[in-house]
Amino acid sequence: MPDRDVLRRQREALGAAMTDILDTVHPPVARFRLMSLGMSPALRTESFQDVVGDKGCLSCGNCVDACPVMARQFGPIIIPNMRTSMALEHLVADQCQRCFACIRACPQTDRGLKEFALAYRRGEKVTHALLASVFLTLSLSGIALFHFREAWPEAVIHVLGVLHRIAAPALALTPLVFLWLDRCHFGRRLRQIASWGRADVEWLRQWWRAIRSRGRIGFPTFGEAHPGRKAWQLSLCAASLVFAATGSALWIGEGTLGKSLIQRVTWVHARAAMVMDVWVAIHLVRVLVRPALQRLRRMLALHGHEADLLVERAQYLG
Image 1 (cartoon, rainbow, N blue to C red):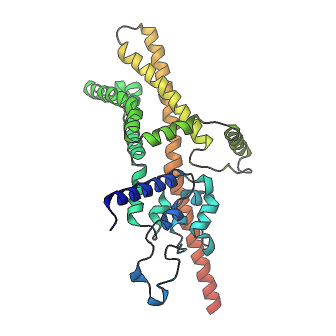
Image 2 (image 1 turned 60 degrees about the horizontal axis):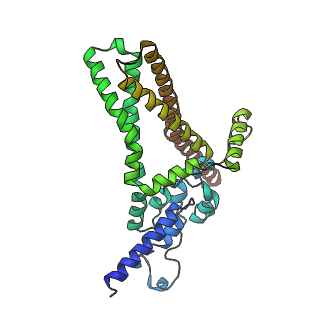
Image 3 (image 1 turned 120 degrees about the vertical axis):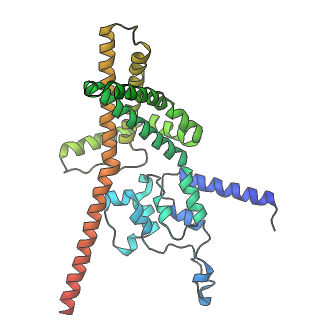
């Protein structure tokens, strides 16, 4: 039996290989499948015990159905030779969003490798959940305090004010939480936002031309860090800085700043909050509403295909 040092080095090498795969903007399911143990011997007959291909793609189409990029660009895929991991890699390529849904859906990938992929971006997901909850608290309490203060009892206004002042520093500390949980992806995200080139500018131009064409020109392809997402994140960061500066001025300078200055800072604070609310609403529509409509469209398309098959069968039998 190999000693513990050998096993430890093997585990470290395997972990480094999987990390490199998951850090690459490319569908990882095929490489994870090849790193798995393959089909169980209990599922093979004796005549196939020496056949190579136990780790091969089953053409089940699970990875294709699970991929959000495939769903957005191609809709339901029913052609058998396009329901493979090879087709997924070819069609998605560098547009991969690194959600790892293909790995979770693959029946040929070992459970341990699936758990590794699920845990790989756990810090990023925890930070995202924290950011969403903090922002929701700030948004709702801020709207109630700014627009509906006179409609609420004094006790409710006091509670909302306390919640708002608790959530504000929590929002400022969220990047530090992300850095503490996952330094690797924190740095990766910063590099993605800060990296701009000619291709990004051309992408934005194509996006603007697609909007002005009203459907005649298709939108440019999306990837994990496309320029639209980077511009959205930069604008959110800028609004957050203005939001934090004006909010701190209102908090610390209460009672010391003049009335006119307080009114101006409050106006800027409210407008920055409105910008953040609009951008987050767009984000929610994109990640929640549009995928739901796409799933509904796929279901209708599949039902329509099944209905056509039934009609053809009835005509054949008749």
